[in-house]
Length: 166
Image 1 (cartoon, rainbow, N blue to C red):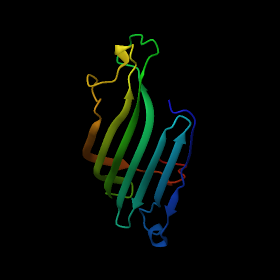
Image 2: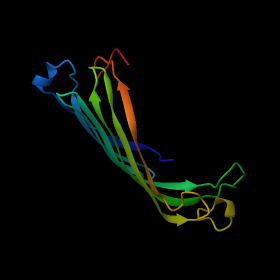
Image 3: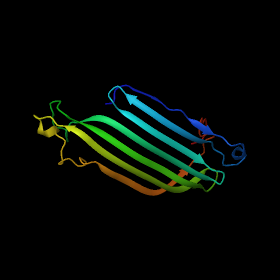
Image 4: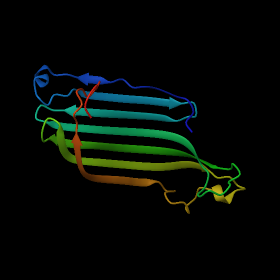
């Protein structure tokens, strides 16, 4: 679907000597990602994992994705290989804000905000079953959002290079 992907993902760790003495210690990380593919897809992403001295944990991820894609129609009927082509754009932000109840158990809120947009739709003229138009649910793109509680248990011996725990 995307062909060969090539990218770079540096991981930047922030270590505080004061925080290492704390029972809850975990390093904070900042991870940008850049991907491109042989079929024109590209993605830019930023992951942030922030741990504070007073037992707060903030995980956030923001993403932009461009993907030239194809629509083959709905169902299992034979489509004779015909497809509609279109460009898909995705913008998303997700994250969690959690408070440590103990040095392993965290509770808080999770948020997901997503926006999808479709452009440059090129429908096959001779196959109505594979056409992408207003009759298809989600054709106009739009928002997909959510918020809710989150509980996390982390017994790993290291966030970056765990060799034990779960």
